[in-house]
Length: 165
Image (cartoon, rainbow, N blue to C red; front, side, top):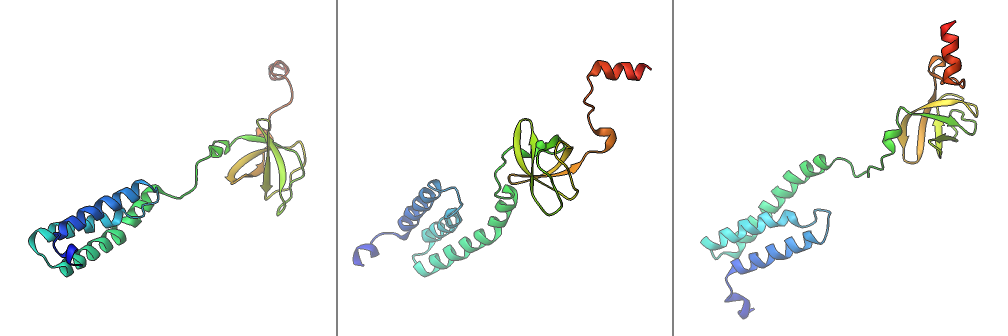
C-alpha cells in the first residue's frame, strides 16, 4: 500500500472517470454514468483536501443523488421500452375476417395481403370487413364495420348509375 500512498488521490478519480465512461460507452443501459459526477466531485475535493474519507463520502453522496434524481427523468423521457414496429399504422384500417371471431377467442384477419391474429368483442364471420382498433403485439383488436361504412363490392361505374337514378 506504500506505493499507492504516494500517488495523489485525484489520479484515482481521473482513472475512475475514464473507467466509468468507457463502461458506459460499451453499454446502452445507463449502467455507470451515474458515478461520473461523483468522481468529478471527489476529484475537485481532492484538490483541496487529502482526506480520502471526505472524498469517498462526497463521491457516494453525489453519485446517489445523481442516480436517484436523474435516472427517473431519463426513463420517463425515453418512454417505454417497447420497440416501434410500425404496426400501429394499421389502426383505423379495414381488414377482412378469415376465420370466425368470437368474444374471448382469437381468429385470423387479412390486412393488405398479410394474415394477422385477431380478437374482437363482437362475433364476426369470415368475409366480414372489420376495422382495426388496436395492435397488441402480433394481434389486431378489431370491431365490425358500421353498415354504411362497409365498402360495396359493386364497381364504381355501377354505383354512379345507381346514384344518378
